[in-house]
Image 1 (cartoon, rainbow, N blue to C red):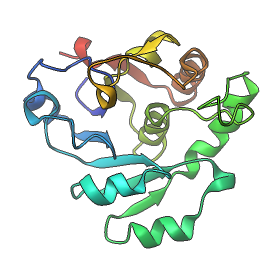
Image 2: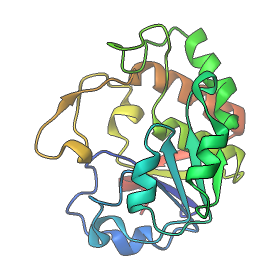
Image 3: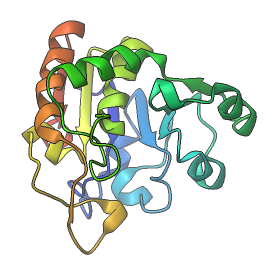
Length: 201
């Protein structure tokens, strides 16, 4: 399974020195805040697509290499598409409308609010799940490897060990249990094969 890989925030391949393997994938998707902590020897350096939350545009402007497209994901009711296109001019921005219906479905299955202290009534799934949807919809991928997605794949709402918080775990603001249930629906809907990168050898 070497078609498409998405590099998440988890530490699953830290120190594994598998960067060259990652760079062999045909489609490589990274997050906009990943470029300051992803070392080439562990995570590779090739980048085809970048996904970022609409509140993290500054990360793209500061850190993002040239990519085929930059996908901007966020809640449709808060999305300022004109601002996104203006600020990311030259980065080939694309607004992720493909995730909107799945956000509604996320609410329907009873997900807890993303960043629940601030918006408990507005469930909002992770960039990782958004990237999977975009790979299936925009790229029509069928085989996807995930690196650094331990909590999502396990449906684990426990402590979240993220590379962006290296050195300590934090309590995740994502409802990974609900995200795992939604992921199963996404897999069925698009006919996906999804695997952990550690098993994609």
